[in-house]
Structures are given as structure tokens and as C-alpha cells.
Image 1 (spheres, rainbow, N blue to C red):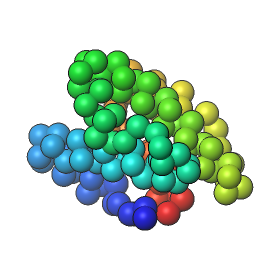
Image 2 (image 1 turned 90 degrees about the vertical axis):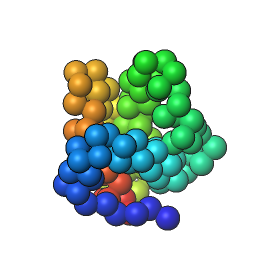
Image 3 (image 1 turned 180 degrees about the horizontal axis):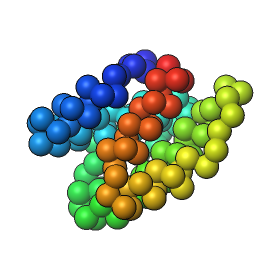
Image 4 (image 1 turned 45 degrees about the horizontal axis):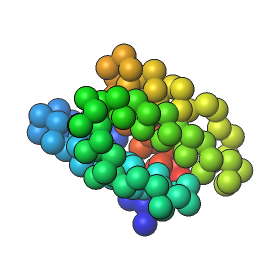
Length: 113
């Protein structure tokens, strides 16, 4: 089940908790994107977070690109027009705007919920 989240509250909680809520949000976004795209066997949120941590966020860049692909696939499956979100998420994360990428992912997930 996909949970709709208020993006502003998620951002505020991420800032107030010094990123701890951001970790939880990362894990939830990953798991829910796997559900929406029908790829429940893909890397879980916890594993994706640990891989990002171990690889000093190199895996996080790959993750951002793949999240965009999965969200685009889910949109196409539902007849919703989509663009190349993976490149946008990758660039945002590459330049240090990961929270913006999370917010955009959550916005798309809220639309698909």
C-alpha cells in the first residue's frame, strides 16, 4: 500500500531531525517505488540505503537514476505522460539537491497512489 505523504512536512522533519527522517523517507520512497512499478524483487530501501552509505553515495546516484526509470515505467503503465525523470533526479542528487529529488519522487508517488 502506497502512503500519501505531505512533502512540506517530510522536508521539515528531515531538517528538524538532522536527516534521520530523511533516511526513513529514502527507505519508504524506495520500497513504494518498487511496489508501484511492480518490481517488488528489486533492492529494498534498507539495502539501498546501506549500499549508498558504504559506497559514499556513489550507489545513491545510481539509485536516483533507477528511481526515475521505475516511476516513468509506472506512469506509462497507467497511461500518464512521463519524461526522463531519472536524469533529472540524478542531476539533482549530483549537485547536492537530494531533498528536492526526494520531494519530486514523493510528488509522483502521491499522484500514483
